[in-house]
Length: 130
Image 1: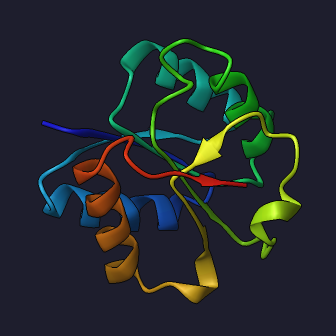
Image 2: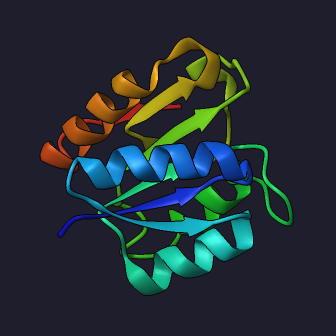
């Protein structure tokens, strides 16, 4: 079973995402901050990471930069799902690529699920440099 690590501090959003992802047949794991998310990612090695940027303890961009320094972590697909509406080139210096950059208010949950399924299905074949 494919695993999706949700790194999100909003408990309601995290639960909603997990319910929908589980319904699609994937296993979900949860982290509430960047430190916990990085530790879980490197130990569990999920098939996809769904990452918020504004997180306690360690923000999502710092977490991503550290993840991309790991031999396994440099290639794991990451979808950023954030409230920050930044242009892709405005997220400078993260040290890696992401599969998608989605602004939460611009996407319905069904559309996010489609993105997740497509990224897992095409794992590693297309990335967006941010």
